[in-house]
Image (tube, rainbow, N blue to C red; front, side, top):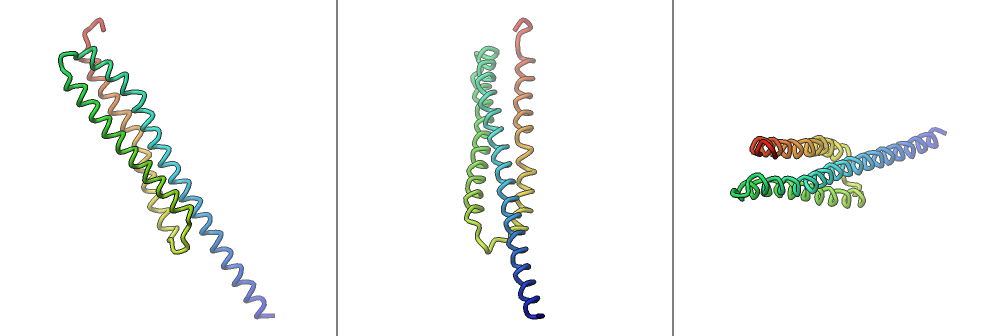
Length: 145
């Protein structure tokens, strides 16, 4: 009977470890999806703000095209960064879906939690940039504008 008990406990340990790996894998996928969502929000924010800011720049500073070019360059840099992050997230999703048994899921989840915390700061950062441009344009606008 001792051998049977030992054998059953061994199977139980293996199934517990498999369940833990599956849980960590699902957590990793969730974190990567949230990072991708934050990057997507940044792209949406930029897509909504750039036409408005470009129009305002053209109206307020028609004789200074460098102002609009500078603003567009900053927005394009933010767009490129968000696009790269989305591509990285898609790559992670593919790797997680393959689910190699040699992956240290606990370590990966810890790294992804850090990445998620960083990505969560992206939308407010871009909104802050846009608000600063709005403030500058408000100050530069003629009083009746």
